Length: 530
Ligand code: GLU
Image (tube, rainbow, N blue to C red; front, side, top):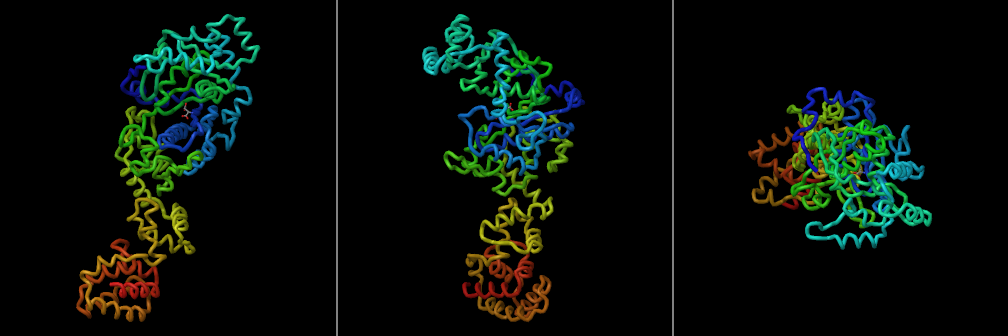
């Protein structure tokens, strides 16, 4: 395979290229996941770019479930994909869940309707595909016999096909007999021996492939199911897909797809392709194992593999806001050409353009991801995400009944939080007295005078008429002046008493919120400890 153009074709066409791309018919794009497991960062970015492009051009965003590989089917994976899309705020226009005019939207159901077989038959009839009757043992034999240092994994291709058991090597009556006897077969594409197949990738420019280097991929399996290669082409055609953006791992399959388009429907109907760059982790391609290794999530939401019961943490559960998540993903491989980094979904739709998607891999930086989240925590009204923090508090044993008070507390500490899960550390002391106090931070400078200050201050606090931050602070300062102790020296002990450690918002604000009784209780408890 050779990639010719160093820049996207869009750059050669100049401005207005995207308009040109979309001028022909209504834009229809699809996200076509196979329900085989958790939804990886790269997968969500693919969804997002498809979605942003569709919405920018007033088009349709379709979700099609590619579940033709029964051996890779994973229980719960489809529902999980829809849950992730919902969390991200990405609504499909057509999908197995909300239907549409081009259904069914699950390939297994489309197979039931016999949609794919006719195309496989047509390819055989036209001489572009053939029946292959080889048993697994015969295939294994072919591989071991042809294996060499130069060719470690021999493929079923034009160099070998005539030595195998298929409708190209057998006589027509032999083929008929095998078919009549219901012998198991697959249908393979007959890759031309010596052709150059090229197509224009929107991001990468012209991509050329030598067909002779590609194997005769299976199109229809022995169980009658189409493979991905046949199904993706047939469905993109029947669903009138105009643009297809997918991960660059699909580049090697592109020549097979281009040929199928040429043979079945004509190249002029083929969607415009864009193969999106990989997302890179600290050591090359970002894998789901990287999460555990480097301590950051790689899936959108928690995913538990039903076979191994292994739980892989998601961005949602880690404490990311969906607004931050899609914002940071959009910028992994694309930029608006300005300094702007924070984008709402609507701003992304407005600004997104394929012309500014890079072809080089985009490095995922977890620290930067957290920066986005912290910015979004500050940017969004607390009311928008309060429920998520409430759930987190709930799961850790704190039930929130007073929403208005909770909102006030979250506003008070939000500048200190990067993840939604940070709020528990930063604000649980408003509800429960701290479990441990950092007495070591106080003890070295603790004195009988300071102890007496707090003993007397309790009396003063009990007599306070108004319980608010200003009144508490005034009473604190007055008593400190009277006792000739610098208020600064008393502040840290007071903070440790209420919060347990050296953190949190202004301590008088905390006292005002937790109330007189609780404040006095915490001071008393700490005095016994210091
Ligand atoms: N089913 C393929 C996947 O899971 C889709 C590839 C494509 O978009 O063509 O990635």
